[in-house]
Image 1 (tube, one colour):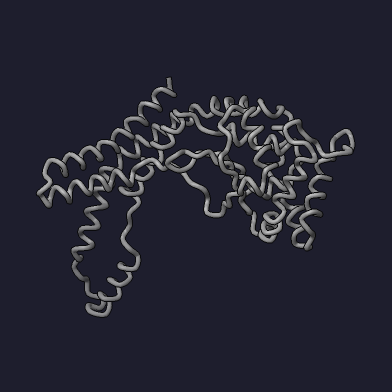
Image 2 (tube, rainbow, N blue to C red):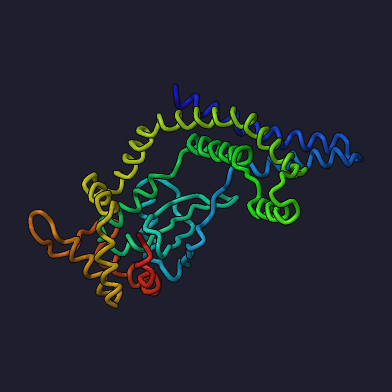
Amino acid sequence: MKRVLALLLALLVHLLTLGFVALGAWVILGYPGSLLAWLFGGASLAIAWALRPRLGGLPADAEVLDRSSAPELYGAAERVADLVGVRRPRKVAVMDLDPDTRYDRVGPLRTPVLMIGLPLWLALPPKQRVALLATAYARVPTGDELVVSGALFTLEAWRDALLGAEPLRIREEAQTKIAASSLGAVDHPGTTYEVAGMFGRMLGRVLGGPVLLVRYALTRLARAGESRTLARQRQLARRAASEQDLAELDGLAGGGYLAPMQAAALRGESVAAIRQGALARSRLTDDGVLTTPPHSELLGTRESERVDDELLAHYTRAIRGFGLIS
């Protein structure tokens, strides 16, 4: 029931955005010769554009790899995607300092892109790399979740526009200096700018109340379905990785893997030495020491080594900044 209510409320928010588009188009097309119609219609279309749901894009630090330069990585990513049941990534990108690995559809064409965070990827054995890819694929949102998240973004834009506006600090400082130099300690009357700003903030608080109420209700409804969403994502990830592998990945991703690599990077160790140290730690178990790092049918030890060879130049660049990761 809460899921249906969240979806209906989110659709109403999106309908409001479409209403601004329809209003602006109707005014301009209905009165093409009126300057006032163009101003009002243009303002309505501008509001709709500012409130539009974002299509997403690549992070600024993401570098897309050509398939020809990383065929083994593309192959592993596609095998795991097929097993999880999502579209194969058309592009694979790497991020030097972001430990998270994400899978998203970006741009107007909704191109599926896999973004791999090199710090955690470098520390994982082959089996955990498969679990990492499976987890990233499993987190792709459903259509309902996209609608709700887009509506929350729109409501956040409304909140910032109505309640987040404050007087320009530079202008306030300039006004204070002018008043001090001209009138000294004598009180000076408020300027038109100050009066208009005060009126705008009052209007924003009046209109912002319903926006905050809708945002609060939609947020609560969305959070009510988080447990169901997490269970669905876990079930999808288990198509390519076992529950034990996923639990071990959660433990690694929680922290502890990065400090030894940071220390090794500060000592000036090579990428190969840092990688071997990470693999040596992955062989330690409660029952003893494994002879080889844990591997998977989807990504064997040799295939994982070839992936490392493909990413060597990116690893070399990334470890220079490992000290910046907190």
